[in-house]
Structures are given as C-alpha cells and as structure tokens.
Length: 81
Image (cartoon, rainbow, N blue to C red; front, side, top):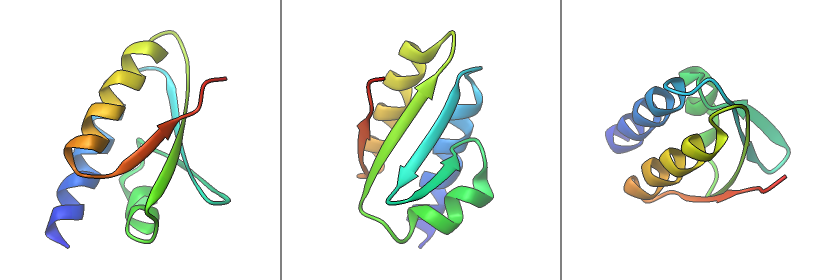
C-alpha cells in the first residue's frame, strides 16, 4: 500500500507543476490528477487509466505524466484530442 501512496503523491506533485488541466479517467470516473484525495479513491481500484490533458503546456505535461505513471508501474493511455 505504501507503494501506491508514493505513486499518488508523485503523480499529484508532477501534475501540479503544469498549468494545463490534467484529468484522469478510470472507467466512468473523472479525477483531477492534482487532487491527492481524488487519486487515493481511484488509483487503487483500477488497472488502466486514460489521461486527458488540455492547456498551454500540455505537451510537456503529457510527457511528464507518462513518465511518472510508468515509473510506478501504472498503465496509462494519453487521449489525443
């Protein structure tokens, strides 16, 4: 469990470095990735995630988020809009 706690903090801190909106979709739930509380209730129960990134630094944000998810062994798919 401590491993997923580290992942959640890491993901939220990484997301907070960007001004873009970064939203995680897990099945039919949408969570602001900058919200540690939202991540706690979601990351534990799902295996696959979709990430929606919008904003001025979206390209950099996408790269950073893919890196941090991969680092923690989480499967994420960034949705190109």
